[in-house]
Amino acid sequence: MKSLARIFFLETDEETARAPAWAVLFSAFFIFFLTRFLVLAAYDLRGFHHLTSDPGNYIQIAEFIARHGHIPNQGGFELRQFPGLSMLMAPLGMVLGDMVASGYAVSYFFSLASIALFHFFFRSARLTFIYTIFVPSWLASSTLIMSEGLTFFLIFCAMFAVSRDGFGARQIILLTVAGYVFVVRNTALFFIIPFIVFYGLWKKDALSKIAFQLISLAVLPVIYLLWNQMEIGEMFPQKRFQLEYFILQGGDIYPKQLVTWPCYSMAIGLCQPAVPLAKKASVLASLALAVAVPVLLVFRANTCSELRAKAFHLACAAGAFGHLIFHLCIGGAFGFNSFDRYVSHINPVLVYALFGEKKLRWQWIVLIAVVGVVFASLTGRGERALFSFLKPE
Image 1: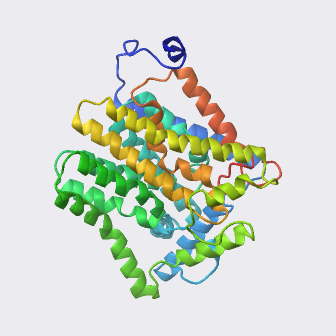
Image 2 (image 1 turned 180 degrees about the horizontal axis):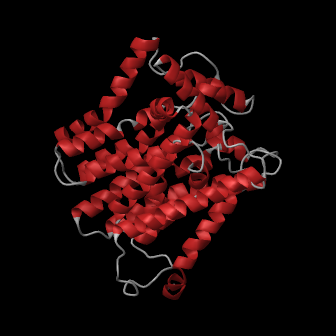
Image 3 (image 1 turned 90 degrees about the vertical axis):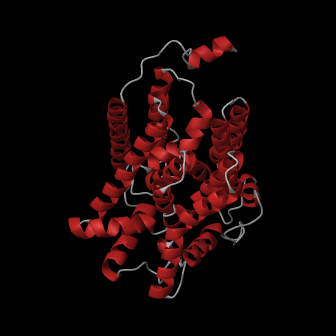
């Protein structure tokens, strides 16, 4: 077993020098742009339009916000996206005069910011490079105008705030900023909230401190909901749009609810003879990964002698488990069709759980990058999509 591990990982004493942060981030940013450029070039070659589906929807919502000063509450399922990304795109788009350029600028900026936070959090060059290119769904979505990079950035804001010593103005600001994830991709709260609660409990923090952290996290969501109520007379119109889209996509096969019994939609999809075997394999592999991550984190927690390290691992495990349970309960066709993409929405924790302090050899990191680019380039809709079971929208 030890000899097999040496094939993939360095021995701990084989590499002791640590590259400066600026060099690691410069290299990671270069890898980010290189891999995303290759994916965009492949999309052009196969005629896949960059603004198909979700990216085009974000632009449409941003243009509406720029014209009217509030989010749309009338329209169809094309407005189903959470408006957080579009709310940041709108003012920049008004300055640039180009909402598409604004979308790429905001999406890429926060993707790079999440890479920087990842490195400053875990302090591992190899881990940072793996995070930059890991999981084809993250590589594909961060190539386009999508909210994953912003979501990861906000998750890290919460993790930074909670896992640092003390609880002062800096932690309150970080948690308040992290609360914006409710407007960007509110399902991330199923990771963040268990993380905050379990970290505090294992550190034996006062319940008042944990409660204050949750209150700080709730500030922006409450302001957002109240603003919607005053401006458009409805707190959360995306729920209507998403339910309409769920029903449209699910047909008569899948449950017509946003949330249903665990694994219900997944079981239906796996039992459909018309669904390609590759798609079923992708969903099952993603499920295995999502189950393995909290197990690995709990195992690592048991090997930690320091209380804070143990609390961090258990908090990550609780967050990953909460995130998994929610996505197993998603109804419609999306509880099956998009499960493999949903798993990647806690990509930073997936990378840390799988690799942690181990140093994966460079040849395997290069292989991950090549495989990721190939999958991301050749997936999605269209006749020339080789792997249609992984969608970049």
